[in-house]
Every structure is written in C-alpha cells, then in structure tokens.
Length: 299
Image (tube, rainbow, N blue to C red):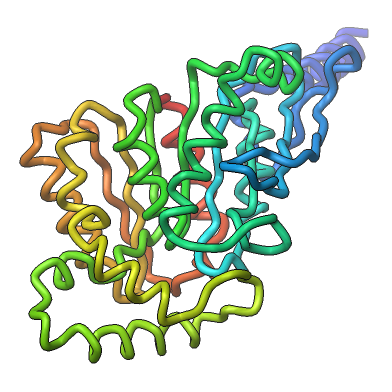
C-alpha cells in the first residue's frame, strides 16, 4: 500500500510540474500566444494616404484587447526582403506591426523617391496617431517604435529624427548611400558620382519602382547628402533608445560612425550588435528576431 501511494504521489507531482511552465520560457519565435476569442490576433489591410497617394499597407494586430505598442516596419531598396518573419514574431510578443510600401513601390500609387519615402514614414506615423485608426487597430499611439532594414534603416533614422514622439528605433544594416563622403563632393566629380550610384541602384533592382530612374535617385542623394548623412542626425536622437544591427555587407563602418556620433551627442541608450552574415541576414534569421525581441522588451 505504501509503495502504491508513493508511485501515485510521484505521478501526480510529475503531472503538476508539466502543467506549470514559466511564461518567460515561451519564446515568441517558437510559441503562439494564448488565444483570445474576444480580441483575436488579426490582419487588417488598407490603403494608407500620403500626400495625395494611397500606399498599400497592412497591420498585424496582436492578440488581446490592447491597446498594443506598435512597430512600423520599413523595407529597403527596392524591398525584396520584407522581414515578415520578424513581423510575426513581434506580433506574438504582443506588439502590432504596420507594414507598407512607399509611394511608387510594389504597386503603391505615386512616384518613388527617397524624399517621398521620408514623407511616407511621417504619414504612417500620423495614420496610427489618428484616434479612429488607433481604436480600430488596437494601437497604443503613444508607444510607437520604428524598425527598418537597409534603406528602411535610413528611413528609420530619418523618421526618429523628424519625430521626437517616436519612443525608440532599431536599424538593420542601415544604408547611408555614402552621404558622409558625398557631402563634400567636388563639383567636377558630380557626373562621375551620379553614374556610379545609378549603376549600383540599377543593380539592386528597379523593377518594383515607378516614376523614377537610377539617375534621378542618384542626383537626389548627392543634392541631399548633408540632410541624408546619419552623423548629422545623431543630435536629434540623443534621448532615444536605439539598436544598431550590422552584418558583413560593407555598411558597418557608416553605422559605426553613427553610433559614435550618438555617443558624442550624449546618448547612453545605444546598443550595437554585429552578426557575421550577409545583407539579408540569410543564415541569422533567428538571431535577428531574438535581438529585436530583446530590444522591444526594454521599450
């Protein structure tokens, strides 16, 4: 009888231990959240207005009544890597994610330009701050974070610098278009620089972009080099929490200079992480997601 009781007690203990699983052990990368029948996770697609154009957009809405902190996820040039695996993990962690295509990209109305992209980010922020939209999408409009990859990283820095209400920003191999060097470009080197930049942009792929040419984009970069230079924007980001992710794609030096400028501006909330992978983080997708999720936990 005693032995049988011991066996039964051990079995009951085993069952109870298997049921009590600490919440912190469940990673949003691998574990779905508990279902909320009243306020389930959802996807809402719509067209986001920006300067007379309509941008193709959607929001991954997190489970629960909210309102939820929200990430605006910005794609690069031209936007082949959309990082939607990252977006899904962020949603499982309890955040909403807004994704959109800039003017003139991937079927969105209007003409593509870097200046238009900067304006489109501001339009996306304004859309989420509209009380009606925030209510419909269960968005906490006081808790917005920008995350961008490559050119999207550039747009993230611009968006944060232009809007002090953005809580934090994270960049993934942010592209600065060599703006630091182009800022002091001699006039007699202009045509050569335009040709080199245009060739690079054409190689990246122009097919998803409308109303533009590699040459017009190259000229735009050169004319706006001082405005586009990461280092010049650092003082406007001195009080924000910032994550800078780099890889073995040749963009790390510009990002290192940006981090150094942030420190000189007095920012003590900067974290830089380097990953030995390509520009798309092809073999570091889990590591990339974990780095972003760790960052969001602090915000």
